Length: 286
Image (tube, rainbow, N blue to C red):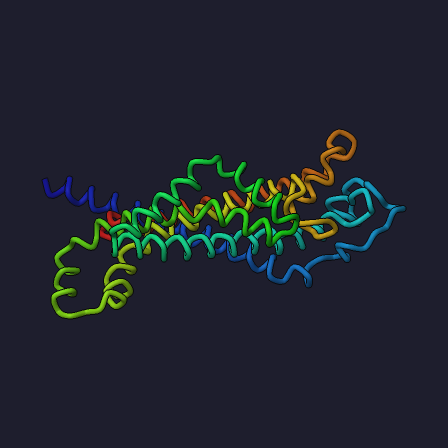
């Protein structure tokens, strides 16, 4: 029996170590990606907006590693610069919807009553429509532009975080330590920040991390449809839209930003999965 217990403990330790190694690896890769986006203007080999029609649609070579687009602009430079607008827009969007949704959810879950019912019915209205279709409608009303695309997606994305935060608060506010804090005379704002928020931040953080890739694809989708970033801004979705007619004649024009989206979304999703494993109570217990 002792041997079986030792084997179980050893296997649990190996699993925890493996999870932490994955977390460190993906964190480093995402950090590198963010550094590339942050210092994109210093890393580009050419001016991403300078046109050279004599070198238009040049295939990848030693001078232009990813080739050039229809205007002779270096695609590697535009992909690197596009990381800045695409990734940071997605991070801004996730920050907005996660904070806004969490605040609304915590308020509704803790106070309850008619206000909670009304706000949840409003969220039901937003959730009743297909997300991307609703975002296209809102972006079309607001007009083009990356910030308008962020606003459009924020309008449809906050209910998910609101409902998640609300469900977490409803399960926590009946706990004995919350009742003890209320009986001790603690104000609601103190209870929320000191006792409730630290206990619900884990699921919200995991959801927000996993949502970065989704928001990145949705922002790129709006830009692809002409409702996001406007040319000549280097943005991956807009770049794919600009090169879609040349998929057979000059495939590198659309494959370069497409691969950039794929790699970025994959890294953020893998990081989100690893964060979920790290914050798993079983992992902490082990």
